[in-house]
Image: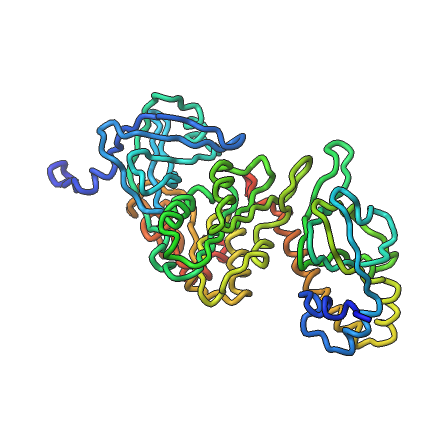
Amino acid sequence: METLKPILSQHPFFKDLQPEYLELVTGCASNVRFDADSYMFHEGEEAGHFYLLRTGNVALEIATPDRGPMVIQTLGEGELIGWSWLVPPYTWHFDARVTELVRAIALDATCLRKKCEADHHLGYELLKRLTVMMEQRLAATRLQLLDVYGTNA
Amino acid sequence: MPEADVVLDTTVESHFIPRPFRVLRTKRETHDVFTLELKPEDGSPLSFRPGQFNMMYVHGIGEVPISISGNPAKPETLVHTVRAVGGVTFAVRSIHRGDILGIRGPYGSVWPIEAAVGSDLVVVAGGIGLAPLRPVIYEALARRQQFGKLILLYGTREPEDIIFEKDLEEWRARFDFHVFVTVDRAIGNWKGHVGVVTGLLPKASFDPANTLAMICGPEVMMRFTAMEFLKLGVDPAQIYFSMERNMKCGIGLCGHCQFGPYFVCREGPVFPYPRLKQLMTVREI
């Protein structure tokens, strides 16, 4: 039976991951699809998966009472969505609205956490990769906070 | 000093006499940015190279440095894009068709387009920083076959702050020009990318070993963009910034625009990144 291993191995997030770890991760993976204008998840829901985007675009939104939903970031092909699956209480902090048909690999969070607990080398490897992404997003968020295009910047 | 001993340098003096230009057209780009098309009253076109600026004089109000945003191949119409942020630029905003403005220039260094021939050319603009880069884009498109990939990464605060929308639409429609636009935040019907402009770099496919980058925008944005280029392996000497400072004379005499050892009006506004790298993190400058 064909598995998702070849697809996972080609995704930038898992690039050059050792084959035995790729095997473990593949056991938690499934193919998913979300239509445009649907939501992958909502704020407050359980973060049961994290997603590696293969195609499509997603807008991470936060609802504001006076201005409606505000898009804080968009994500597309080759990027991943979410680290809430790794941090208790495992709930999403934003809404994820699909702006263009998404095809993605969903990784089951409970499955992955169990495997990371059982094999700390795998856990460390995944955490190193996630930390790179978290650092990039933190740096981007700080730049956004600076409001560099404002008249007082 | 006795009056007789004062010798006027007429070469220098001639730099300070503005030429009258008549306003042909004004276009509102955003709530605080507008574009002026000007015609020289004496009929003599003002030729310039991409990256250069003029000193724009509003009679009775004052003078400000404004980069040239038009097409260098069409010097018969002078185009300036201005953001209303101070006394003079607020006055420029009130200018109407048929009014007269004074222009001195062009001044300053130019974008190194020749150095990009045979390479990928990546243009990164933030906010009104697209204005001094638009002449580069016009020229690069006119000589399109001489470059590798041609890429524009453009970031603004919100969708309403995007300038040159018509140009962007035309550029995006081309198969030989990769245009990425992002905003820092969005509400409503915005269907495009949201995130900082540096986040666009990994999405743009170019050869780091064979790329020349031209960056213009707020200084913080330029510094962070340069860091991203370096991470991807672009040679620092292949990265260029356009600096903005309080230029007054335009010819390196008054010192208002001094930036470390440089006068931005004379040695700049376009600088290779290695010349600015250390200076940009010195708080006292």
